[in-house]
Image (cartoon, rainbow, N blue to C red; front, side, top):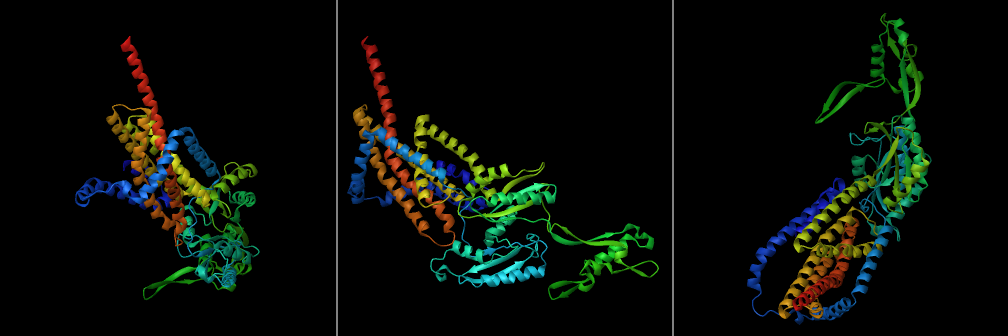
Length: 603
């Protein structure tokens, strides 16, 4: 039990999204193992005294076990007589798994199908709210023409919340899809998004496709509203925008890049009113001019009206025709001390300028962003290919740098934590095994069950075309403890059989050692087969599932399912072979020592 609980420590140290997702699994497994251990040493013996009365049938009376024995015993004897080929085959399978693993992609988490789709087009920062609404209405109408779409509703600009700092040029449309049974024949989610993307292509509009829930999570956690983002840091907005465009050009040439959009920081129109300080010759204070600009153009809250439980501010400002252009603003009257008025244009310079639509900062620096999604390949290999290309082709000015964000940021954090904790856990488990057997070789022998158990998981992962992800590594971690535990139990059975055989014959020979190993391994056959059968039976419903969340649970169950099969073969075949090899060496050493003692005695 201690080994299985220790094996789950890496899951407990996960943080962020991955921690919140898999901590309940780790706690459930830990508490279940603790409860099972308590019941096994307290309740089970008591129940055995009540339920195991009468005739106890031998294991060979079971037809299934007779069949399994008939298959297993010849295979085991063949492996014991051909130890080098057996270990060589196991090593080849392990090296093959390593080779396949090098070609498997990696990602943060398997994409979870939320059912709905979120469409986030980005337009020019200078767009007005009326024009944004017009474009959004046209896009929603085009989306509703797809037979797979039940309804589509959009939002232009930011919502009334501080957690949604969206500019006017970014729309959000939630597309609610009909059940897949009502879709056109042969239509998939990926094909549907591709069709929508092609139909919604408009000049000056960049399409971004995501999902409602993951989009909110990513925006709150990393500030990125696409699958992957590149954050550019610096001190000048114009330089940041220029670097972002260069990065977008390089990234767009990398296979798999989609929806690439360098956020346009500047381009938003502003009316700049610069007060002419010499206007004091009219006797007008600067504060008077500022007050007129604030109240007449920027609105002033005069009062608050209450209607039931709702409150509405009462605001006042000039009508649109008096503030719709710099020329109209220049005619606004400014009172002077003698009671007359002068137009605003005589005491201020009024002009239209372009500026940033939104200024973002992080870590004490200004920040720009390049948004993109990755399609047709895994995120990890995409970043691995794009990173050296960016370093080579984009010259970063002094004081400026970029870093990857979005899902890759989460993936990097989880990988770094696991890379630190997993070796520590392996070392601690090796220490426990050493204390158990008082032998480093024996501890290493049992620990060999881990890589060979991972072999089957890698092969099945490759066959099902899944990428490495946090879910997959949690599955491997769950397999890790079980593999060590089964190896420990097999060695215990073999040791007990060897001690029994030594007590029967007084000493061991190579033939009696092989008999002991064979008998001990045969005794372990039924519990090992039952363990594997129970695990496989519990995981098969997950592999057949198509309900919500199956995209995450299948990659988690795949390593355990494949690893239990390879663990079965390793523990039943390879472990007895290595055990026999080690004990044969000890036996030869004992015989040599005995021969030397007899020689000295005769002398």
